[in-house]
Image (cartoon, rainbow, N blue to C red):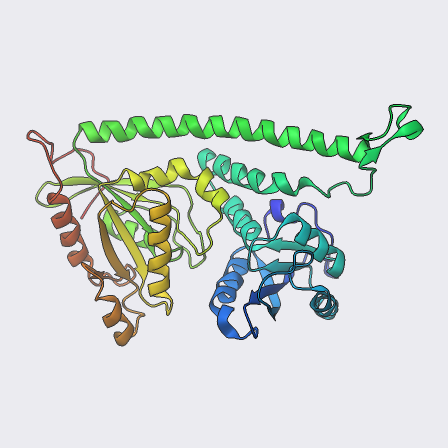
Length: 403
């Protein structure tokens, strides 16, 4: 089932079954493409459907509207909104999920037109993060991102109350004073801002502890490798293979969010750390990037980025470009990169040959173990090229695994 943040105040909630069980939420996906509304946005909608499935939502239909820019009132226009309302009624859908970030006015306008809850891509991703965060740090970061997203959207809540009071109706206070609805909104905003301040301080404290740990590793001359990549590329599975860790592995998007650090020692005595970080996705919400900045610093402060790619995906090249774009955004563009083409056992030979043209790419399969020795050797070779002052430690006791 979707997270409580997404479904906490729906306009139309899913009905129960005859035996009293709550059925799965049913959604219609909504996309806009420039021009004729052809299949230009199919890949993005395919990913949106996977995101919905990850959040426990059944997709019943897709609606694609061809137009140059979204309608400012209803996102897709009043005529298409009426068609969408009829489809929702026929399919008994509970949600509309738009493949884009809607303005508060567009959400209100579309909800009024179709009569069910409307969420956008950003809201869906935030809900998934809320469901999958496990640690106190992860939960605080996700809640901070959700509140940053929700704050400007508090407008319109409490529409059943007066927004403006005045004259005798306001006890003689005069025209233009706040009505009960406006006062309620202001109380909500203040509560959200206070909570955001508390969460920011909590995240800052965690970031300071993380920085102390990084400095300790730096003093011990232990190189660090940050595993990153598109979501569901197999990062956690590869971490488990390289270190013997027990990170959660699942065939869903954003299966793991909390960073996991493991220490590795090579047969010749070189010790380094491997850190599994959050996966990326196209149109990653800026609220998440801001909230997870302290976690993403594991990438910016790393000596090497192990960029894991799902080589079996037909969109592998686009995924590589997306991840590199996010790395640039967070200030990690200058961190050296080693590209691991994972899931080679599932990739077709022609696509794999194209991907192997990437400089320094290593072919591997976390599932079968294919190419693991080559990846270990590539990691060792790249780390040995790093500047290492005299007296640097190459062996650290208590390693969690060996490569």
